[in-house]
Each structure stands twice: as C-alpha cells, then as structure tokens.
Length: 116
Length: 111
Image (tube, rainbow over all chains, first blue to last red; front, side, top):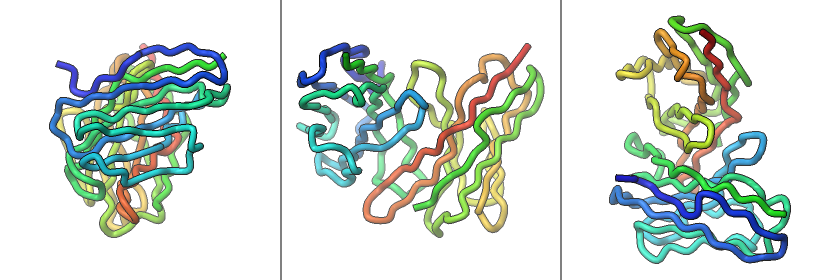
C-alpha cells in the first residue's frame, strides 16, 4: 500500500498552460505539504495544510494554488506555467503540526514537471 | 528560523563508518533535529530524529552536543546502497510549522 501517492509522475506541458498535480495520503495524518525541488536539488516548502486549513504559504507566485478537499488530499494547481516552474514537486504528510517529536514527514514519489 | 549547513559531498568506501555533521547555530529551544535520506527519483525518507545527546536506531546514530548547535549523523559500515543525499533539518514552530531543508550532503559509497 502506497502511503503518500501523487499523480501524475511525469508532466510535460507548454508555457502558459494550466495544470494540476494530485496528492493523497492514507496514513490518517493531519498535515500535508507541497515542496519544490529544483535542478540543484534544493528542497523548498511551498505550502502546508493542517486539517484542510492553510498554515504555511511561503513566498510562491499566486499562480500556484493549493486545494485541500479533505485532510487526506492536497492538490496543487498551477496557472500560466512558466519555464522556471520546471522542477520535481513532492507532496508529504505528517501526523502533527510541527515542532514536536512525532512530526516525521512521509514523502510521495514526486511529480517531475517539465515546461517547454 | 534555524538554518542548517552541511558539507556538499562526501566519499566513502563500503564497510566504513560515515559521519556527516550539520551546523544549526540558531536552533530554538523547542526545535528537534531530523535527518532524511533521498535516493535519486524518490522522495526523502526519514532516518532519525533527536533533541539532545544521542539517539540510535537500526539504521543510524545521531549525536547532539549539549549546546545543540550542531549534530552528527553516523552511518555504521556503509554499503553501496547508502549512496544518497542526506538532509539535516530543524523543525521550527515559529508562526506555524516550517521545515527548512538544507542543501543536503551527497554521500557516494565506493566498492
């Protein structure tokens, strides 16, 4: 059983298009995250949701909009895609909201987005 | 927010012990230190977490001095499959949960 799953695994699209990446976790966790990993392998947090509420919104363009229909799902919609959006996007989940011992994050396999 | 600093890369040979040190000078009182491992084309995977002194599990040991301004991940007797990127991070709860991943250390294990 996959704990944190993402779809699609690969996404190739043209500049200006709108695309979505879906994430689901079956761990019963309360908190979910989106990270972006660029070509230099830096892993940067973008958003965090706790029980469907946004708790972290880092400095990302407002073309990126997360949506959490329930606490097991956190989708990422990207409008007007740009070349610089090309990266691997990771979804993750954890049991607690930060700063505590049990906040181990479980990551999905990643979605490699290529914008042409 | 605590920022972490790690060596960019390390090389080792199979069977050796590998120690990767991470600096986090601005760690806050409530912060925990966590290490993750990432293989190519996969998401990071939790290895170990600690607050102070020493923590050991079946995979690694984590050494944290009294001032907590650094930590050392120790991998005993590495194998080729331990070749990966290792991230040290500090969980910060200022203004909501924020996980700051450093640049990571690329460990390359040779035969």
